[in-house]
Length: 271
Length: 157
Image (cartoon, rainbow over all chains, first blue to last red):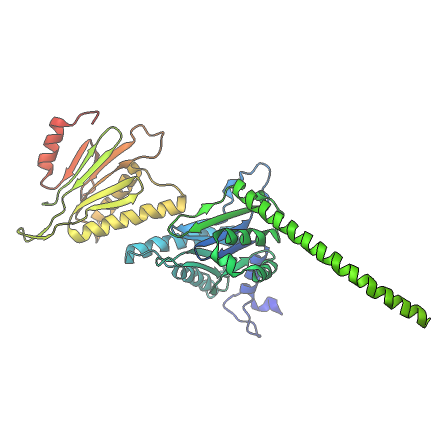
């Protein structure tokens, strides 16, 4: 049934769906995870670094890229499609500067990218872009922003979001853990981003790449050492949490043993 | 022609100078703080003089394209490359609908340590002719600046 309605993507299915767009979203779900977190004075992007072949130079796999001095983007999905979108977005950033003498707002460039993605859901013989993006940066007035687009061409603003493989799990984790403290502190924002990634990625600085942008500063990729420091801090916090839980459990179990002993005596009486 | 722009190249620096007046009808001085200097990249800049509208349009166009190159390729173009790009744009526009009546000087210090000469200075006129020299100038001041340069420029300025 679905096969009849998804070859020409300009066509809706009988129940109002665009299958090609949904298939594109499936392609996104296969891509490596990317996480974005927005703080009061910082925006953080984190991506899963998939293992590369032994002979491959791993620095050529760039999943976090700058679009302009104050805008950066991470994506999940087809890398080649991302390259094309990035190129168009970079041209638009400079074009905007040339025409109106102002840097783009993050919303503007997100809207531009989303419009591009939408255009390809309504064209003849063209498939949609198979990627979702996380776009971060600071507007001209200094406010930090995090936006996300998807293959259908919709975009939303987020406080923290994840895209790609197991994005739902990571997003749920972010919902649980994003607090006022994360928003206020740069350190906490970075830590939350790494924590969220570690939910689905093996622990270790070689499996994650974290990039950080501060107001009026350029995007900075954290070195492996810096990431290791955060991971060590996170693991220590996890240990403390685990200890606390164990102790709580022990106290809890000592009360339940007395309860069960009364239960057993009762049942034995019944017998 | 009344606007002056001058460039001087030293051993490890490039000096760009401009006057700051904008005149109209030959006798009215409209502005005392005109800016003719346009930043192309962190280590390269362009001085432009001529038809006021063309000057800004052309210089900003070149500047933003240099920035675009940096965004796409991750490195900044050397002053040599910037000058060649500028010359190309000037020459293409010349025989098209929109030509620019702007004389420019492109100068900077190359960040590439392998370059033979790292202080790079180029002059491009409105017809798209480019030269590299130790002293370059556009406008009426060139009659004075180039002559003084001939007499007084030396290697280790």
